[in-house]
Structure formats: C-alpha cells, structure tokens
Amino acid sequence: MRLDYLTIFPDYLAPLQLSLPGKAVASGLLDVHVHDLRQWTHDRHRTVDDTPYGGGAGMVLKPEPFGEAFDDLFAGGGLEGATVVVTTPSGEPFTQELARELATRERLVFACGRYEGIDQRVLDHARTLIEVREVSIGDYVLNGGEVAALAITEAVVRLLPGFMGNAASLVEESHEGGLLEHPVYTKPASWRGHDVPPVLLSGDHGAIAAWRHEQAVRRTAERRPDLAHPSQVLDGVEVRLAQ
Ligand code: SAM
Image (tube, rainbow, N blue to C red; front, side):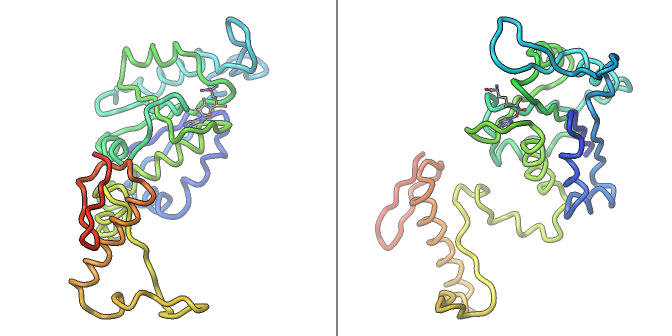
C-alpha cells in the first residue's frame, strides 16, 4: 500500500518510521511519502494560509498548494484504488469498519488540516477526480490533522496481510466481533496482592474461552452498551446490548 501525507509539519509524521510501521516500510509492504505542503508554494514566505472569507477567527489553508500537490501526486495516474482522506472533526467517525474498508485501497493520500481547516474547494475539486473521505477520529478538536492521520494509518495498516507477526491477534480484538476484548494477564500469577483469575491457570481451554467470552460481554454491557450486538446471556441473565 502506498501512503502519502500532505502536511505543513512533516516532522509530526516521524513515528511512521518506528515499530511495526517502520518494519513494514523496510520490508516493502508500505511505501510511505511525507510531503511538506510548502513545497507547492511560490512566494518568498512559502505561504500556505490566509484569512477566512466572511471574517472570523483564525486562518484557513489555501487551496492552491493542495491543488498543485494533487496534480503532482496523481500526474502518473494512480487514481484507481486511491482515496484521499481529509482529517477533520466534522468528518464521518473513524471506526474499525472504516479501517477495514480503507485497508482494501491501494493508496491513501492524507490531507492534514491546521488552523481553521482546509479551503472547502480543495475537497470539492478532489472529489471530481477521486474518492474523498472526510474522517474524524473523535468528538474533540486537535490542533492539526497529523495525529489523526497517524491514528487512522495505524488502524488501517495493521489489517494488511503480512503486517502483524501473528495474524491471530487480530481475530479477538475489541471492535472486531461486536464485543470489547476481555481483560488480559501475564506472569507472575500473583502480583501485589492481585491474583490472575484461576480459570486462566487451569489449562481447560473450553472453560477459558467461556470465561473470556463472559468477560467480554460484561465489559461491553458496562462500558459500551451502544455497540451493536445481539443480546447475550450472562449468569442466566439476559444482557441487552443495543442493536
Ligand atoms: N475549525 C475546525 C472545526 O471546528 O471543525 C477545527 C480545526 S482544527 C483546530 C485543525 C485541524 O486539526 C483540522 O483541520 C483537522 O485536520 C485536525 N483535527 C482536529 N480535530 C480532529 C478530529 N477530531 N479528527 C480528525 N482531524 C482533526
């Protein structure tokens, strides 16, 4: 998968070189390109922003640098299977389902906003050429889109075949089967007066699976009753999760 990032703070995306994404870059699974938006400016001050039409606080990212960036990035074609992801708190909520959808693309181009955001015509124009998704990572406001782009990237690329050392880790995760994941434990069996639940030491795989499922249902009911999942029976009591 090819990943492009348009940003005025390229250094913010340095973590892409670390840990598993870094390994995936080294192995060729990911082809990462971080672009300084200012390279598509032409004035002495390399201006990327201007005051908002209609007045109001803050600055708006100008359309021309993004327009020229898209012209260059897509000059050799490559629109097929590509999606522009515009990070914005007013976008569609980022979910595991959307991560799965984006993981099917051959190329993602992230447009990272700053200040009051990106001139709307950048999106309107890009939509005439390519799929554009405006995506929010949560109901709060960050200073810029780089952290959002990193979060989206990490959730997407770990779904790519060959990215995770152990693909089985993906199967039972929170948000994969409609339930949050059960609590997890490692050695030692007893730590500061807290013991690992005995069933996990029993070696009885059926009992362990049942306990984990029960814990996942309980946790989901307590923390995220809004998650769509059929009702579950727990201790003989039907726990109703939202449909
Ligand atoms: N004035 C904008 C609004 O109220 O919608 C907020 C702009 S915010 C200060 C600057 C940039 O941070 C946005 O353009 C976007 O790229 C990014 N950003 C902030 N919060 C975000 C969120 N929850 N999800 C995704 N991107 C976000």
